[in-house]
Length: 273
Image 1 (cartoon, one colour):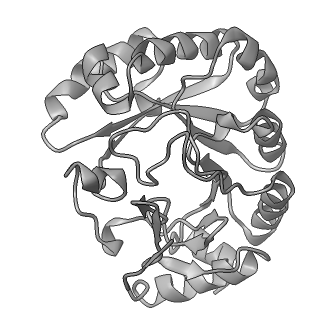
Image 2: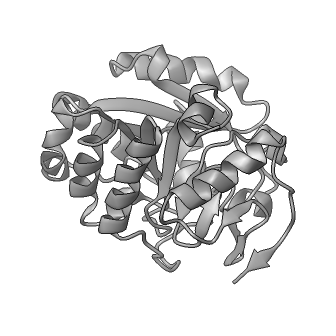
Image 3: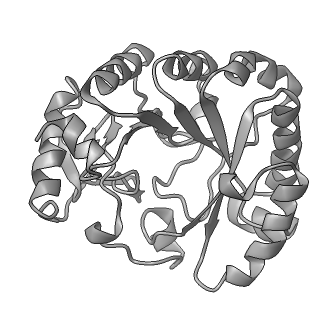
């Protein structure tokens, strides 16, 4: 079975994920990678990202996801996202706090490209949202969404909720509808008890079988899922590491296919500094 065949049969996911960097302007209470302003940047270089996307298109991947850290703390990220979108459709996971009118002007090409910005918003209650993500984030995110929408850039909402938070979803849905965002563009996911969430006893304890087989590349190697390369107390969990090699992309993609075809990779444990 080829990589393209495995994507067509949904043996592995059609989206390739890239961790562009690990640093962030926030320090959210449930962050998988324990990101903050103070952590090492650990970036994927722009030329490497674009070469990986070129190969991804050749192998049969259908879209790209970019996450972090906060991708847009990188000065080159607006240009990277536009370049990726000219190759494959892309979604960027962002905390949404940086989208001032001046910054959004740099994102203008995305209005005519297959690109979406998935902005994190966890509650319709400003205090509840800010308790998870930092003081003042709610107001900045709402303003940023409005600025993006005015620039005709596609926006999705990503809500990360802890167990028992279902009752809070309807006000959140009403909020995103009031901002002109469709229900289909509201992604709700549980807090996974990894990274900083484990420090605060938040979320669910996800096992490998709970995670989608979506090839995820970082500066540290290739992982099973976007939820796999987690960091706690400054140490990277390599229990779901596929390969240390990320290029050529064929190598980690074939490793993922071998594991996925056999029912999942052996789940070990391991932390590295």
